[in-house]
Length: 305
Ligand SMILES: Cc1cc2nc3c(=O)[nH]c(=O)nc-3n(C[C@H](O)[C@H](O)[C@H](O)COP(=O)(O)O)c2cc1C
Image (cartoon, rainbow, N blue to C red):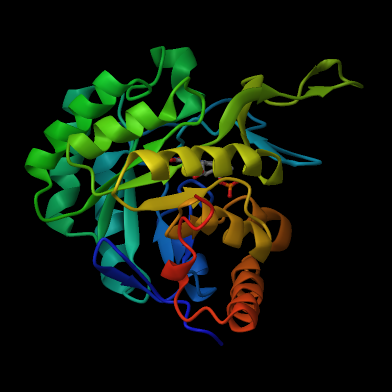
């Protein structure tokens, strides 16, 4: 096996594969990805209050991936932070990224203050959830001013924990948002969250398939959007990027790294191929590196520019 290890913000990952946020819901269940040999694991986005999520059905598979409107179903910060403390103690093999979502700056700061003492390897600010706008209006952080303001305020209180800004592709200019996050002190960028929102209609029932009618699109259909976003962000910022969106084969991993990703998230593919997808990707990537004489993955990052 080739050397798949990667340094990201001075943290060592044994391989470049990340479980993206929300693919698993329960905190403790994320150990399934760790046991499957993922390089790093992102926990489901946590909010200030407990959220039941959107009406069922919340996820739907289609030919090119999935559509979901989970709506940030989670236990809320009080219970969630206790569960995270236990998870961090029990799972040392793969760096853990704690994902946080809020609709107000004050709430974001409260969440960060609660998580920093747990000393996770990373905090991820979800500045991009598409499935909450019915309740709250446009999600926070979808334009450069608000994103920069949140990141700047978080930077002040998360001094010892590196934090990442997760961006949405559903904006007119993702690079200016990435740039403003970098200028405000983010340690890395995560791109992309789901695309859309989209809608699928069941032609027999003559109704949208999702309870919330519309939802975020993930899986192979969004790979070209993700690659374009990562390519553009890489040209705009110096901080490293976790790329994700539609990766299901080792060739997609290579493509995403060539666009500029240092680490690569693989989410929806775990629903179609199971957790063994990480082993399949490691094998494919390793064979490719050996064939191409690549000693370290960083040799691939950004070469398409
Ligand atoms: C069912 C489901 C739930 C998700 N929940 C979250 C979430 O809570 N927070 C978040 O930042 N992204 C969430 N996402 C987005 C993923 O983290 C990822 O950005 C997206 O699915 C693209 O990657 P993929 O095509 O490999 O799945 C969710 C995606 C899915 C499919």
